[in-house]
Image 1 (spheres, one colour):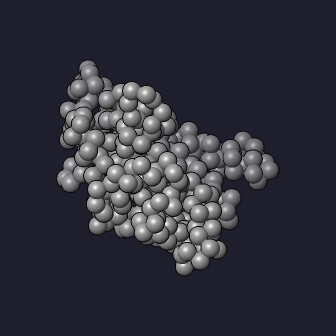
Image 2 (cartoon, helix red, strand yellow):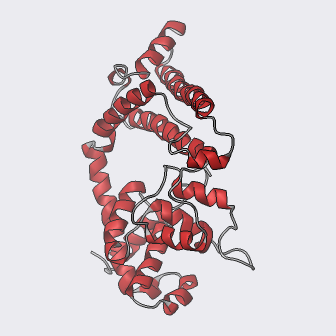
Image 3 (cartoon, one colour):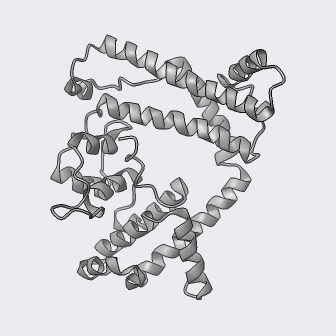
Length: 294
């Protein structure tokens, strides 16, 4: 569940996803969770007897609704899968899927703190006023006075990571006990998640995220790169939509069988969404040097 749930991400992460979703608006849009479902049920084609990876219902459920019930209009790729295999999208996912979702939150918050410091977007002394983080640095300073700055940082942030993990374990154990659930079916039907942060830690985490949003995600240097990366997707999509047979040969049979603009656009979307950052940039530069895109 943890390994698979983000397979549907485009090149350049959420920046690429936003760009591709806008381009795909006339054709049903794009959603990375739904794309992950599409990859593991349709696009991976290694086995003689079936498309996809033959994953269990529980794993597909976890991909679809690890962030909670999926209500309202469904992304088209998810709707197709759900029509073939009812994933009970109105319910919560299993406790294991909820663990994967919160593990993702813990991991990316911790990595973003490391990355922001390493990139020079903010300094260690600028995050010590934040909840959890300040206490972690203070503990390291008490225990290891005069520690090398990089070791100090690592020791502090691993403590931040540990605080989040311990809070989830303790709070979720209590939530499971108080809920009285005895089966996975009861977890799904409970109406609320059972794997959760405590209210105090959730409040602290929102303050940390607000800092990261201001100083990292919306930093001028980051926004400049995001604009450039969005342009790559915005150039590749219309080019391949107009010239689909310029895609690799293994896509040609599917392209020729596509009926209508929507089907073709979704094939182009699959191709671009499956690119790595490096490959997308290489494709963009090759086409630009050849004068095929602006």
